[in-house]
Length: 244
Ligand SMILES: *Cc1c(COP(=O)(O)O)cnc(C)c1O
Image 1 (cartoon, rainbow, N blue to C red):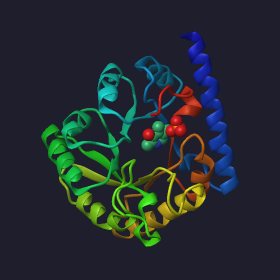
Image 2: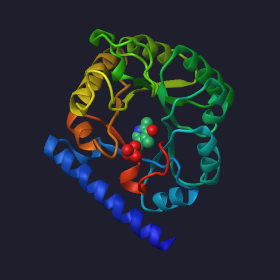
Image 3: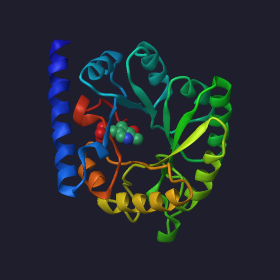
Image 4: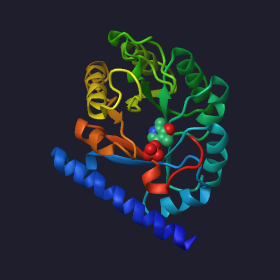
């Protein structure tokens, strides 16, 4: 336990250094970027240690794991972000603990989230997840990518839908650097594309200014492109066993 604390503190310090250096290189203030630690596959005890070390935002991608973890950590001063593909039958559970759902990618999900947020008497933050591997203009198949996400051309419509949905608050956009398509291996270009989409979105919804991009391997590119939130798992908690 104590060893784990030392390890997490050292990892966090290294990530903090990376974010600070990336901000300095981009001429941005450190406060412009918020660290979200992705705690998926790691236990509630790690979340507790992270909270003691000053982490205030955590993210999970599977409701089955996240729900009991969030319940075990309910007294901690944490914001919970849901970042995984979300089935509508899990929405009621997720709305029970999530402060922000970053993976909103279809109208049906917006309807389900709104209904449950109203039922729970909560306001739920929502990010539209954009799949940049599915850009139609590049001759791709279009539609949602395998890892979830709406096509770039759907962002305006989905944003408008969230903005007028009771119980939901449109906070901005999220992406995962694509492994296929025109942006494969071009993280910086992908994140700049997300920034352009964010600029468009903010014309209609000025408060929707969150841009969630960048993970352990590419947080520098995300900060350079203008991300306001980076989602870091491996670099803080260690390499996960299995493929998720
Ligand atoms: C797992 C995950 C992350 C964190 O990835 P790392 O490479 O471990 O930093 C970020 N975003 C999403 C959506 C994830 O599923």
